[in-house]
Amino acid sequence: GNSVTQMEGPVTLSEEAFLTINCTYTATGYPSLFWYVQYPGEGLQLLLKATKADDKGSNKGFEATYRKETTSFHLEKGSVQVSDSAVYFCALSVRGSQGNLIFGKGTKLSVKP
Amino acid sequence: GAGVSQSPRYKVAKRGQDVALRCDPISGHVSLFWYQQALGQGPEFLTYFQNEAQLDKSGLPSDRFFAERPEGSVSTLKIQRTQQEDSAVYLCASSLRPFSGQETQYFGPGTRLLVL
Image (tube, rainbow over all chains, first blue to last red; front, top):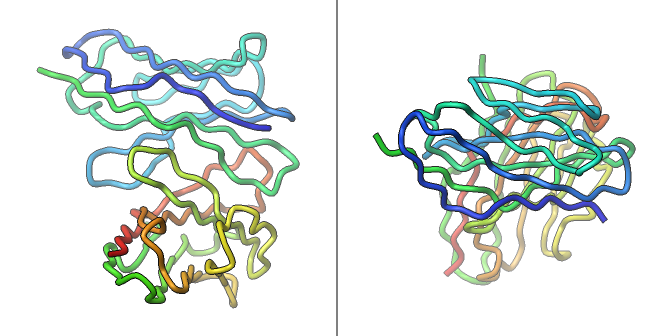
């Protein structure tokens, strides 16, 4: 079946530290990969996505590269800010399915000043 | 522009009551999804509409759960005879086109349901 595994949190970092949140997946088809973010008190919003192997999604200083050989889509940011504190969800969807997203359990990030 | 809206934002129900949760998708969006998010977990798919057609309801946990989108815009998720295990945040999302696996889904703020 299709599933997403992401590193468990919480992750606590100091401002300007480097961030990596690991995400690996299993999929029966050829998936598109997404990172969604949920800021405190707000709804889920798309952070970035990649739809084919070797694509790099980027937004707000965050990046993730679709690695088919390692079935991974790790999220990285070179210098985190306090405002990046949120819960991050890795997700996939498979072409040809009716179209639901399959999410990981989420990783809570706290950035301290 | 207006995003996806959901109402009510919070709902407390006594066990055995029926509840109805409303979703207003972004205007013109063809696809609409419902998800259930338990505390500390990622959202889990419940059902998918393309316009008024419910194309996938494989994620609905029991026949107490029912969803409709009669005119292809607003959708209602109804839970009959609520149980404590139904306590969760119910998320609605919409996307512009029929889902191809690549479309971005836009999420509403969710309805937090607590069943006592």
